[in-house]
Image 1 (spheres, rainbow, N blue to C red):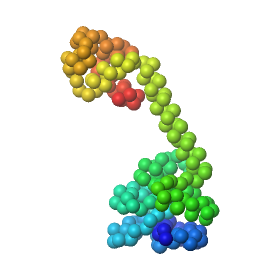
Image 2 (tube, rainbow, N blue to C red):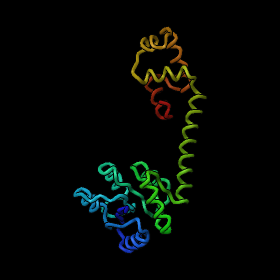
Image 3 (cartoon, one colour):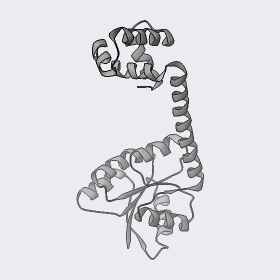
Image 4 (tube, rainbow, N blue to C red):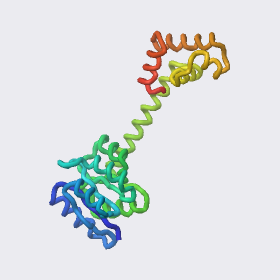
Length: 216
């Protein structure tokens, strides 16, 4: 039997979700909570739900913060976000703090049951609408990284980037020359080319530009 806890500050929603979940003979809602603080207190006293359905926006404690606490202190318990929010930022934050799934509150009982089973089997579950947004978010992040890479390669050569990274590591001109197997004069020439290409006048400004662009 899979033990479930529900956290939502609206009583009617808690009861509605509980009814949906208890339609499955293999899942049981052990407890419901209006606040994640009380759930965390009970878990610290020994309550161990297998899965938690966690709302996000609640007055006493945000569900994202609560999820981070739970996944850190009680790693065996899986958290599924159960919310009305379908935007990128909530989804991204939920995944970052360890949520194993992200469902919308209007899901049918079968979908909720499947999400709980999938989570217990080590998988993750997203509402179809949320899955599309997750893919969009991944594509956007990949696109941003590709743009940075293209921009870097367009401006600085591979050798110049190597020089700049060694400067970022705190190496002196002579140390860079020894490590790269070139003369100190060649290192200076590379650095002059870097300054010229980046439109800066010293290594501090060059490093600041590189960090701003995400190159180092």
